[in-house]
Amino acid sequence: MKRLLFLFMAISCNITACNTDDKTTPEEAGNNSVSDVKNLIVYYSWSGNSRKIATELQSILNCDIVEITPETPYTTDYNTMLNVAQSEISAIDASGSYPAITNNVDDIGDYDAVFLCYPLWWSRMATPAQAFLHKHRNKLEGKTIALVCTSGSSGID
Image: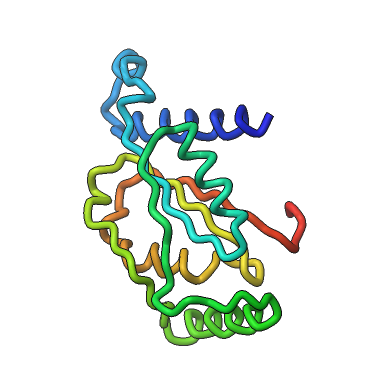
């Protein structure tokens, strides 16, 4: 069932990515194939949950995958990490100061759709994922972006 859900999401996003040109007629849109779309999966995972979803999605889509890597590795202690996450979110809100990440996707322009997998931190996108979006904001303009969010402590709502 999970594979079907992922496949449905992937096909839906791919079809959307194929049909981003407002001048495309319905007949022309029907000629686009899901395999014509070049996808990229970008993920950040502290606990491993988002990594599992990202790698499962990659196996379905057979596309490139990139892990977002913080410049300074995070602690593995959950309670300490809660404080770190809260202070990084506060820094983003107060001064637009994002945590440093080591990777840069120079060829992001080669992709039609970007799937971003990340966990929720304090009901927000994890700060490394926010940093990735901030760092690549100019290169992501006009791209189809599919957000895939995980949460280990809060409900679906």
